[in-house]
Image (cartoon, rainbow, N blue to C red; front, side, top):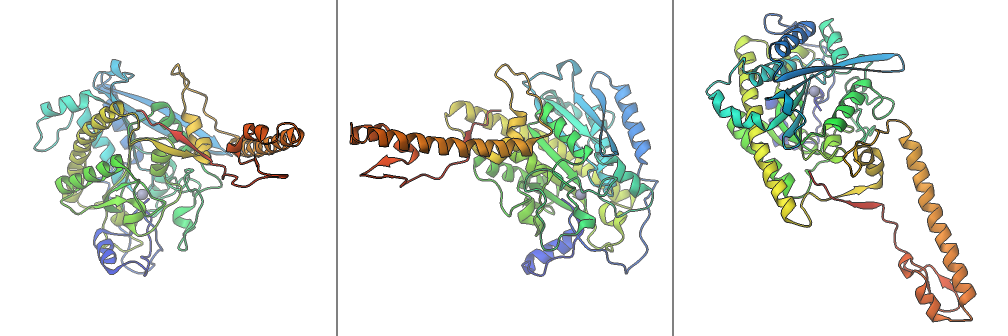
Length: 472
Ligand SMILES: [Zn+2]
């Protein structure tokens, strides 16, 4: 999410006012306005360089080896290379793989120009390691919350894009080869709205074409988070699925998610934040986003996109100002408010997950149950499915398209064979047992002998949906 965009005239007036007020030109969409004042440069008194930020994070991890650990990943595709650093927090690192803990995955800096988000990542890691405290909150009260969590933080998902921004292209949000990493995921990938802007939203040549997206997917598959937050800037908002349609998911779990966001908005955003589905709240739909994938395919029970800052008064070409605080007071206010919001969110969501978990174990059919379409099944669910012994199945990174095709051909040929088989049986048995044999022919497949001819009446539509029980 989070493109700069010209606001559609079809939006209701009230929404236009809200969008203008909160800076609709967010990680959203938009056209570059070439008039207006000179762009504001990156304020180096406030913001680290990307190297400096990563050095700070490494030093922090080094000082707290009991709580923090750091991993580096790299990936490449057709000559394009990307790296990613992931920091894992667990209050007692030896318990990092304790399955009773809730797992949280946070991504910052998915869009290059949103520098403030990576500063927030550093602040949250400093709070988790107790080097910094939250204003007005007793750190002892955080003990119980942190004890229950394992948190993976990706402080700078789009390192190559950020490099371009620091080299002077302050409006760049895409990765090092021009792909928007928040449009490169598989849910509704590649669909283009009327106001599609390739400068902002290029989805890549295929879902997961980009090494950064591949690494994030792999991280999700191996870590299996209960909570996902994709952190952006450009506006102030607490979004939940869906981004690709104008609605939130059905069911009690989704309803509770929304209530929690409304509470967070009241307590930590002073009711300034937009709350709701990304697609329904911003006024445009976003296709192929990370949060929709996390919720729909990876089955992360609580998946969000948080937008932590936006300056709607900034000129459309003044990207640093539009997406990042430029003065010390606002910079500190954003980091303090949002680190408090994140910690409060960890607390609320773990309680909510406790309730959902107990409801799930107390009912045979849970509200979390979902139908998974065959495409979703093959795109994602199959990849993350575990064997009954808990051993992870190998991730199927390639050949999904072919598998889908073969599976459809297999289904089609099975149906045809069945039709031929039943037709043969009914013909050969017509003179012997007449109606008796026909009754044994599988009417449930729509083939019933009614008179001299075998007919295909009432052939049911092949249902491509499987019932899936989401038991986390
Ligand atoms: Zn963004």
